[in-house]
Image (cartoon, rainbow, N blue to C red):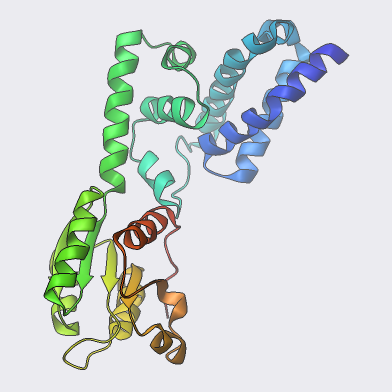
Length: 265
């Protein structure tokens, strides 16, 4: 039993990681992993603990079984809605595709191993994984509002956005145009200059976006001191002008994977 205990201990970290992803919560995931361990120690050879690495696939399959049983009992077959974008994207997938995506991407199993766990034929697994990846990509694609009164800089920013696979849903030069586009185009991310040509403030736009839509903002400005004076640094990341395309890409990438911001009251 001590030998089997050591084998199980080696598998525990990935089991906990996967259980947390499967349930969508740390506490629920740890409880699921604990239940899995309790079942396994009652029949270690049944789950391959005498076969070293061969135990990994049966353990993942057991997690699925226990999770499905708890879901039936609690009528909660899916994880709770998460503020994290990638988890929200995964939640849009059918359950089989979600598990397949997690097993291959998070747990780094081969497609053949993941298909075995989920009882999928190889060709079916290939098709389901391709569909899952495309749906996640689309769910992570941002609709970007650009607020910039310099036409050349607005064009350059737009090209960076498009090159990253996101969509510029509108370009505004002042607060009035920005708010109009907000209503018409439903952006999910805003890239905003601070000082606008008509005397308007990008900070007020960012405050409105956060208050009404919990929208993420990236300030692209040469006047980041204005953000400190207006107590607005918490509203978003700052890319300083003159900007580089790499700096904008990095800021967008961070924003895409950041949790949804809390709305201002």
